[in-house]
Image (cartoon, rainbow, N blue to C red; front, side):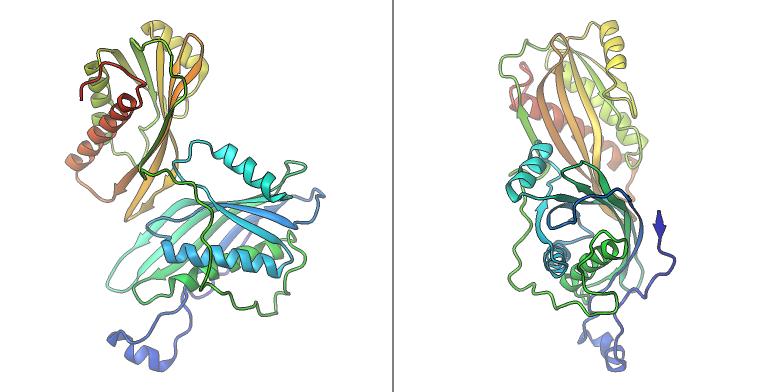
Length: 372
């Protein structure tokens, strides 16, 4: 894996006049951001990248809409400068059919390669001056024909953020760094040379990345089987007992979830299985001991947690009829976080988390007999 050892200054150089009048708010800090990469390139021979679909899930409270706008425009136009036709697709956190979305986009665009860029959390430092963000992203390039991973690794974007920074320009700058790294690692062969200037990026009429976010931004769900046997005894498997969920939140969540399911007239038992929430052997053993006819799986599935600020976690939920092993209901839920917070606030969040799950199961007609 190749690792960057040097980090450029985080902000664009300012003139003396800008520094003198910055306190009056009459000057922009400009585009900011330096990216440190740790990447490796697979030496396997594959076809050159010519048609590419980029699947990205980077927008967050820390990578805001304007940053995202510049990033998408920058990717499209920087790849074009390398002789690559690129389409950018935004992967929504709550999308239930992500694999179908990815396959369909690759086929419809006749892409030879797919690049995945997703957010991996980070840290925000606040003080008297601008916020200092350090955000982590995963990158992976897959050759469609061979299914080989051609290039992969991580990127850490370090930037200052305030009302004076040019967020659109900062997004372009981050996109440029990604394409430059692919060029420098030998993945792209027709880009401008390292000592050549890139063309200006036009962001004035930039089309957004294609998104598939459900109408309700915190919950996406679907009933898969309309005529499943009624649920009577349910075993819950959850792996939520890990940071950033506080112990107070987890305890409140498990207690309230059992209480809410019992209020639906069900016998319910909750078991914590961190890292093993979908292990078939464990499910079969514990469900048999409880004589469960149904399993509810609650599993962490990503998100963007930034220490020292707010963020979110995404959970994948499935209701499984154990007799046939059929998934009768599925959902993805986005849970917001603020840090730091009190134990009482954490416990209240745990109660709400459990209540929202059972309410959605009721409203989707996956469970009968639940109170309204």
